[in-house]
Amino acid sequence: MNPRTKLTTTQAARYVGLSKRQMERLRDNGAGPTWFRAGDSLNSPCMYEVADLDMWVKARKGAR
Image 1 (cartoon, helix red, strand yellow):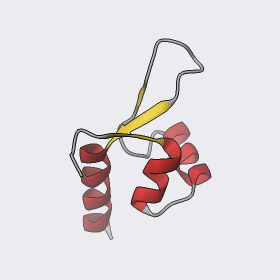
Image 2 (cartoon, helix red, strand yellow; image 1 turned 45 degrees about the vertical axis):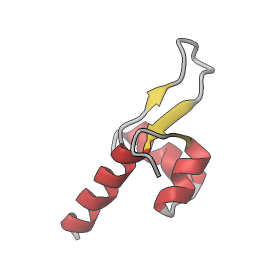
Image 3 (cartoon, helix red, strand yellow; image 1 turned 180 degrees about the vertical axis):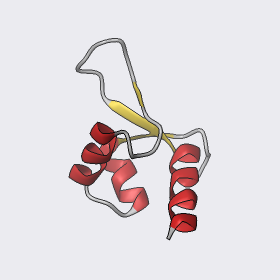
Image 4 (cartoon, helix red, strand yellow; image 1 turned 120 degrees about the horizontal axis):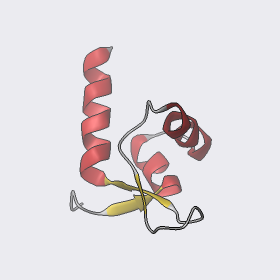
């Protein structure tokens, strides 16, 4: 998969093996992978780049 590919929260959760709710909690706590809003509105979806997800997973593996 292209590292610049953007995923929704649901897709990102599936990619890293977590539930959507776990991803939302991590985002709310500032403990999850880097994310961004796909627009300027508060209703714009939160998105994740595959490269950021890969780096986050790799960092978590090293911390165990």
